[in-house]
Length: 521
Image 1 (tube, rainbow, N blue to C red):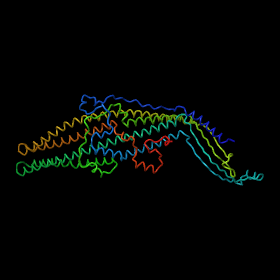
Image 2: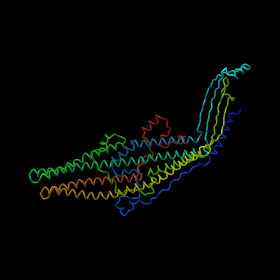
Image 3: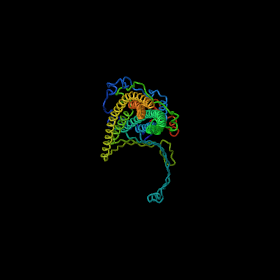
Image 4: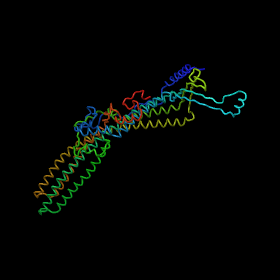
């Protein structure tokens, strides 16, 4: 009879042989970052008009780029969005999900089936079975008996071809991918909050300009009415001034509507209700402007800074491991199984030395009849991998293009501001001269009509140009992949959410930013 010690030694010897087999290199491709175009210099930074562009590559881009606008309200909005945005919380939850999935993958490296079981059974054999009844006539038999047992069973598919190790690689890459997706969501969030804030301030300025022009045009309309009442001019001047005044008044409801819609959109990004926007933003404000020189660094830094580029690379790395997992199905599977325990029938001592029982088994399974389906699955996984390689390369090209486009738009919009400032000054002076000449009777009202229309248009153009400068600068920083670094050394979900999850489910230390290896097993 095999003793418990002998059975244990046999199982350990089998496991040692298995470990030698598992030492084989995994099948499938080892991931290498795909090649991509390399940009050595930014076009706009190194153009002949570099001195006027406001862009410099002499230093790396700032991390908290929104602070360059020196706007306390904008800083507060970014902080609140980071703490409360729900799309960001979705991305954070996926990071935690990927951590748990990595723990599952680690577990596949060990015996996949492990169970401790116990049972007690009582059985009675029918007295009317032919052989039993015949034998009982000769030898008395007990047809009622019981058995009890307790034991431990385990089954282990050996990772000879590296299928489980590729699974761990895929899970690691997927975890890093979800972190990169979180960072990308954070970059998008900070950029969208800043862009909406710039738009809101521009609309508030536009509303103030419209009301100033309404006041100016109301004074002109009063003047035409007075001159008409005194018989100095015709009703034509009165109707023209009334038309201009009401056209300008009609701008106010449209601007107010756009302003409220922008506030509503900002409220969603902040994870709050629109009713809080007025207290956060106030009823008036100026378009934020940044410092003159903007640091953009060098193109080589872009691939390390932009989370979407990292995410595209990690998606390809994850799929590369999936190719190896599919390839392993082409080869035979080696399976070890074993059991050790105690077993006794009724009336015997279950925990005596004679009750020892055990089983050790080594087997092989090879799906040779499914080769066609398995090979086509390998091909499908490889095609998906190739698509993700192309996606990575396209993401890199798109990143370069977005930054270059934002840079040129920023540089050119800065030039526009200078021209429109001169236009506004000239239009304002022209409007004043036209009113004086009309009052003195040496100019027709059409001069006032034209100059006040031109003034309103020039002021609107200047506001739009100033908005474009700030919006394009936000696009530059967003294109450079800045802002995600603020999550470093921070949890991926708010503390209140983490506390709720910990209360609902035993997460161990997986809710922490640096879970231990033991918690993943």
